[in-house]
Each structure stands twice: as C-alpha cells, then as structure tokens.
Length: 423
Ligand code: SF4
Image 1 (cartoon, rainbow, N blue to C red):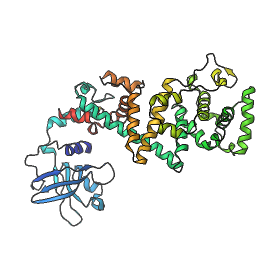
Image 2: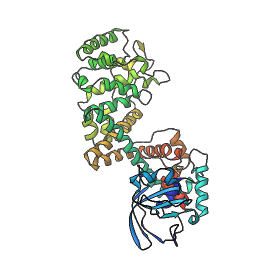
Image 3: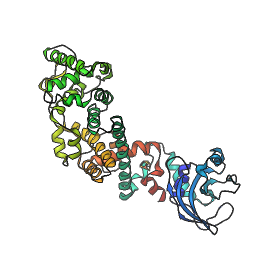
C-alpha cells in the first residue's frame, strides 16, 4: 500500500460510500473532499464533512496506519490541529489530539473494491518504462488530451522558473536575462553550461556598445570564451582587439578555460566556435532580444530573425586555422526551432506570469502548436503506443509525461492512470 493510492481513493471517493462511518461508528457525509496539498502540512485542506450531527470544515490527513500519525510526530505539530478526519488504510490505534479528544478516523481497507486494488498493484508492479503501455491504446482521447494539457502547463511553469531565477540574479533586468537564456541555448545541451557562464561573465551591455562592429563582437566573445588561438591573420586580429577590450572592461579574471567546452563527439555544425560566431552575428543584428522575443507575434518572423549566417571566416572554418571541407550554411531550421522552444517559449511563459498577462502565455502555446515536433527516443516510444504527436506542443508534453510521471510511476496523478483504474 502507498499513501499515494489512499490520496487517490479519497480524492476520487473510490470506495463504498453507503453507510460511511468513522471507526467509532459515527456516520460521515462528505460535503467537500478538499484540495490536495503538495506542500508541507495536512494532505487535503478546505474539506467539509458532516460527522454525526455536526458539520466540520478543516483538513484531512492520510496515512497507511493510524499509528503513523505519532510516527510522523504530528501530535507535536500545530499545523495538524485542524484535522477533522484521519483517513487510513488500516486502523491500528486511536489517535488523540493535544486536548485528549480522539481524531475521527475513516478506515478504507474494508470498503475498497479488491478489483481496484488489484488493478493499482498490477499497474505499479509493471516493469516496462511506461507502466500503462499495454492498456494505453484503450484510453479515451479525452484523458490523453487532458493529461497532455496538464503536464505541458507544468513543464511551462518549470521552465519559466528557470527564467525567473536568472531574472532574480540579474536584478530584474529582462534584457540581460534574455541574452543569457539565448546564449545558454546556443550550447544545444552539450555546451549549454559553458555558454551560460560565458554570457554571465560577459554582460550584454558591453557587447552592445560594439554592435556595429562584428569583428569586435567576435573578438570579445572568442577572447572571453578561452577558445581564441592566435594562428592566422584573422585570429591575431581578434586577439589584438580582445586584449584591448579585456583591459578596458576588466574581463580577463572572468575568462573561461578552454577545458570548460566540450569539443569531442560534437557535430561540426554544433562546434562552440560556430555557435559563438552565430551568436556574435545575432548580437550585431538585434538591438533588443527581449523586444524581439516578446513583441514578435508571428513565428515565421521569429524564425527569419534567427535564421542567420555567421561571418565569412566561420562559414569556412570549424576551428581557428582549420578550413572546413564544406561551407557552413548558418543556423539550420531545426536549430532555430530548438532555440525558439527553449528560449522564446519559457521567456513568454515567465513574462506572462510576471506581468499577469495571459496573452503572452497564449502566444507561447500557439507557437508550440505551430512548431514541428522534435525527434527522439521518448517521442518514438509514445508514437509506437499510438499517441499522436503532430507539434512541438505534443512533443514537449509527452517528454514531460514520460520524465516526470511515467518513469516515477506517478500514475495516480495522471488522468490516463485514473481512467485506467476506473475502467
Ligand atoms: S503516468 Fe500516466 S501515462 Fe505514464 S505510465 Fe502512468 S498512467 Fe501511463
């Protein structure tokens, strides 16, 4: 037995409700089950019950055994004084309040359907990576849609928290935050931490002073990244420029070490040198990333703004002094979409919450619905189970569902799991 299952039984009232009574045979009428509390304190708040002749309003606490109340030291915690019903699987001991009165207790084991319990145990005992895989095709479209909507909302909130953290570090400076977020995503996972450090150590305000000069922007970015090698005419020019700016803006103490970058097992198009050159070009083209990402209403306009070509040198090189076999075509379509999903969407979600303006969140969702799905093994698993994945919205939701629900067996918090148990 798990407390999560008892939560589920109480939340959806999945037990025999005829002659519902406390362990002291007082009749119980559930007027409101209460609101599930995922923070500290009792499990459900704002419940309303009639026990005997008296109507109560307060909290519900859930345990496997009644004695868990004392094992969890709730008898010493004032947050539990307003518990009006103790819901347990097995009643092994009367539990007393501080004033000596007994807390009314509902024991669920005798009134729970054995078939339901069996279904729950079978689902959780399943060793496949998606525990409901064998039943997934029988789940209604409504339950699938409701689940994807719910988990996507959760994912957006989580992603917007990352933006919020950066915003806090930047004392509310949206422009600097957007630049750092964008730079991080130029690392395309493998170098995202190094890119973020580069951006944090190199304020956008410094780069913006030289927006009209691509060589200077490249010099500052490459110099500060620790990747600059003086091996040819171009790199020597960059080094000369960087040395000047490093003194002027006191940059050297914050310079990255070359070992912070991952260069092995990286596709040439994803080499940090190429991505830095592309970021440099974007900085020269955009006066404000924040305005671009929050004020542009068309996804195609955003795509056009990001689909740029780096400087000529970096079209022909992947490393300093090493000519590429094939000329680089600039930021590819998939990379642009990746930047939009990981930069613009979380930024709009965070901005929407901060400004208390739903229109930005609506736009983030509309963008996700219009972008194509990415391709990875999680999405392939869902497709094999018959889940329709037509857009980035479906893809992001299905990744969230797998990572934060299925793989943690949180089936009771998932509409699909709830429907499977109800069948
Ligand atoms: S969390 Fe939901 S979708 Fe995932 S395995 Fe459990 S019931 Fe299925």
